[in-house]
Image (cartoon, rainbow, N blue to C red; front, side, top):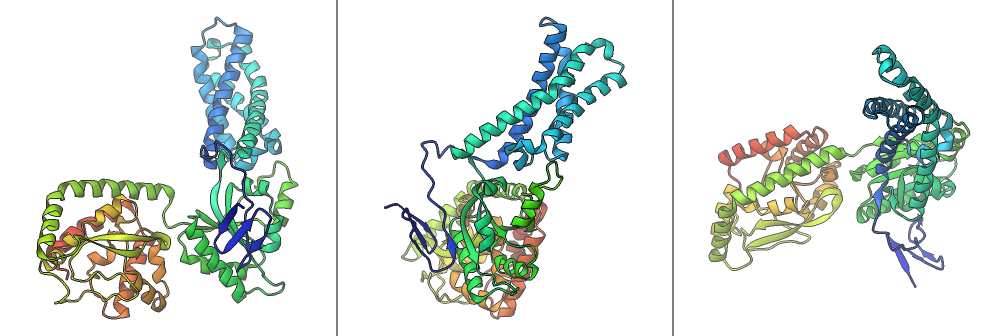
Length: 496
């Protein structure tokens, strides 16, 4: 019997569900031999744009051959094809021609697509008029192009819609991986077609009871949301999709506040009444599948890519340059005291994902449990070589491997032992928000002297404030500045 596990839910092919919470499980999808060959749904718009430009170029070539003959000079018409294609892209983007619902169902915007194609032909005619270049081109070819371009565009979009439908059936296209949370009635009304029109790939759905007339979450609903967070972390969701009546603003605020524990984006999607009204209006400027991002991720995709590129470059260069230092440190540790060279300890990273942090062993103990004592000045557990490594922060250099593996970043909030995360998470309300970005080898708090032992909760609060400021104000140049300040701080201050 095939089982699909969704957190605390087991779904069998016979439809039996054993659940601790109100969780709607997904039905098992049929396995296709090409299932591994899949592409993100966001590539559809660029592909459609390329096909539109190519289609208008073909229409121009067909028009030239019809009127001027196959042996007429084609090079003069290449520029006109470019102008028509650029005009269609600009006007089409503004008119919603590249929204996913329009690409999947072009019949909703037939007139607008044809009109946009007509505008592209008009742009060509206007260009020839203002440049007084009409004598260099066949007017008959341009007129035929103006007549053919709408027909070609509509035919191309119809063919694209058929191809996309088959790609969806074959699981070649995939949407954003999301966890759905919302009112049970709204979730039940949501069809698989509508889910894909939203551009989503549903990992699982968590239904809330939301009693009528009560605008506050029940304790059971809060438990469901916390379970959704666990499920989202386990399955690496890209966002949390809220599907519920827009009139329940107080409930929405409560849900959003609970979901702040995760760095993932939160989007609010239109309820069934809104979708029904907008779907009845063809050519509407309002997209029935348009969502509202109520809370974005801390960093955009471009910012994450830039930060990751910086991490890889710096960590690789540092490992090469510092390899003699790493080798000497490893040898001294081995000669100084028995035990492994590298000390590995469990830490919580981005979105509470566990990883093993690497350090040179500097103590006679290897603590990694529910209770860990922070290092103090004149700590008797520190070895002779370890004291030197800690003062110079050389013991932290193996974490460059964690950076290369993508578990850490060069700059970010310093990761603490899990025992300390649990302890301070209960004392400081916003402590968990530090894990909205990857932990860092160095950070803003560290270059401001907030490092080492935290003797009181107030010391940790000051560190958290610096970390949260860094997350809210991140920039590429801020990372570079912190790296330079770290070099200065290491030359001036001593760790222990």
